[in-house]
Length: 379
Image (cartoon, rainbow, N blue to C red):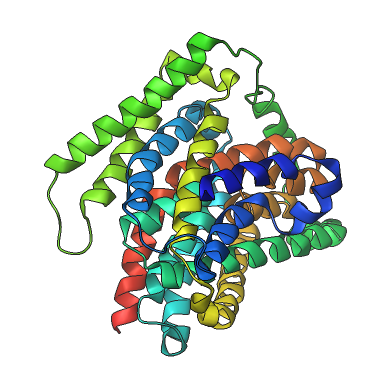
């Protein structure tokens, strides 16, 4: 039942009449929220073996398919300054996570550090990374719901601020003595950014399904042979790490061409099943921690902004590149090119590639940030 709901959501989200509605509350939110409401009012059960099996088998498949099409060579070709700005933004997220745990832990549930760790994966990468870290760290659904709400509100608010700041970029660049030759250099480096193709065929569709199934089977089999390290690394953690590595390895093979047939779109479709099953286990009664976590999220983004400002000042980076890196981290591939293009149309592909880089490292760094948040929670 809950998986039919997300299909209807995706259908209506493509309609022009619903565009403004889904602009402020994206389909990802509703795919999680509606099953949660169905659970709250008793339409569907809060506990079912089906939910766990969906996560167990669908999450590895989605990670493999989502990472299959990444162009790591194009990302590395962006140059030191662009990568350094993205790195500064990511470090700001990783430092900010434990800091907000220290500041707000007395007003948050005991396991809230896990939710903050999962949120860090989203703000470095995207929704897939967030769900992966959530499952890898056994984040309770009671604290994951507030994190989803924060992940819906704060990034959109921050995107609005970044867009508004574009009006003062010339003054900032003069004050900062920004090296504007970086923009022309980046434009020259990103003239061949991957564009979607239209190479769908029944053979490619079956190939994508086979890769997803094969990646899942391999991840589950190998993870079953790996050691469990205290409460830090469990079997599910290994499954997610192995699926991520498999996807990255396959991206260096000709199979990367399956993106023209919609490999990443299929990966997101499978991921939506996982998100709906997680929502089905949540309840509106868990929403109490949202206001405090929302305040923590605002503080966290402020720390992220400070790191980017310092890096921009030190590297004499244009404000447009700092904004692109910030939105690439906190926003993701869908919105990063938009913000980058508002500052400078030539930077749109740069924003996209930086966001893809975030997707690649989001799970690994999210797990690291979760560990740091756990340590902060014990202080």
